[in-house]
Length: 294
Length: 296
Image 1 (cartoon, rainbow over the protein chains, first blue to last red):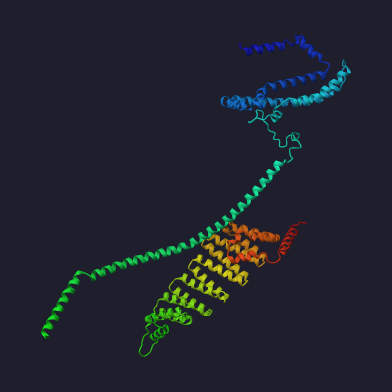
Image 2: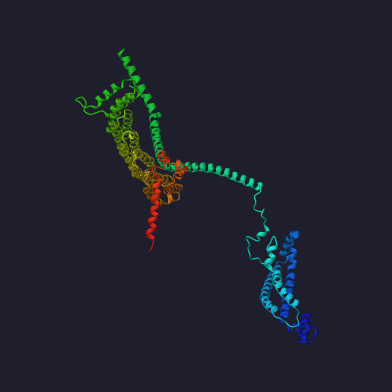
């Protein structure tokens, strides 16, 4: 038999024989006639339970969220993250579930409070007048005590962790508790005034500089666009020039070739020899005539 | 030969060209040569009248020799001398003849060039003739699909019209400029042309036309995306509000300085007349609109 089984069996037996437990009977009977007292005791018991559970579960996180050990917390958190992410998840999820449970209990208890108030007004035999008044006071104090039970929502507001809290904080507060800022908060000190002025001055100077730059850029842009258009205009002209120059070069080359051919033909050695021979023949004829006439 | 008196050369050349009993056909070649020499001689001695005549005759000679190119060149020289003599009708005639000769050579660019020179010469004296010459030159270029060259000519025409204070005509030519620029993808010139058109209308103190023009031009993508569009919008809204200071401030901005000088002068003089009238008109317009939409 396992331990669990034993525990269960013991519980069952105790429940069965509860009626024979004199102390418990006395407790149960004590409030038999007093509905208020019974209800109040139940409410008290619930509050205690809630606080205990909250404390149990909030303890490790209270440790983590202490300001002095912030760095330790971060390391611890890192370690936790690295080693046992799942359990952290479970822990947080469990804590979230628990907070929800506590909130439910609180709501239920708040509902019970008006009932208690009504009962407190009723007169019960066997109770003194002072007791009656104290009961009323106790009932009045109850709502505060119930509200004071910590659950996730209020706890997170007081915690300042570098990382998300285990209890999900879904309330985003912009203007949280104005009492925290004193009237001095919004007053401008001399330093801040000076700083602001300096900032404005610098900003103005920067703006002026940027204006000058922008003007220069505008001019540049316009120049560039005009140059672009001019070059576009020149492109077809250049193409025309190119074709014409090509044609002219080929013409010149052709002419050169022809010229060269003609010159070589003219100055060929054959013609030169013929010229010399003919010249000699003419000179000979002239000499002969000269001799004949002399 | 070069040292001899140009007058003598002229008379000699005349002799060569005139037909007589001893001469059955005119010797144009040598005559033309002589004419050109004489013309140069006269030009050097600053005898413009005779030089002009000599060039005219030389051009005729070249024509006879079927070289229209040289003829055109001589004609242009004659026209330049006529300009010195401030004989405007002759200038126009000579340049027109030259452009015809260039067209014979199948060189429309040169033809339009000579017409443009003519226009530039006479634009002070005979602006309407100048406009005609410029338009003819633009037509020649556009026929040859060389619109880019025409942009300068359009600018010149616009300037003449502005000087004559014929603002609607000026705007018409600016829009033609825009069209020509569009054809050759010169978006910068196109946008500047449209902006200039709006400014001319505003200078003529015609806000409605200016707005209409602006709306028409906004149909065009290139203009819509440009700086000039933003500037025109600002200017028109300043006019609608009737804010003189705003108009002056907007008109001093950078976009204006990139435009043509004549347009810059117009812009600097804005606003002309009473802008408050525009303001009240606009308000009344809105009031009426409200009444119409008021459902009873």
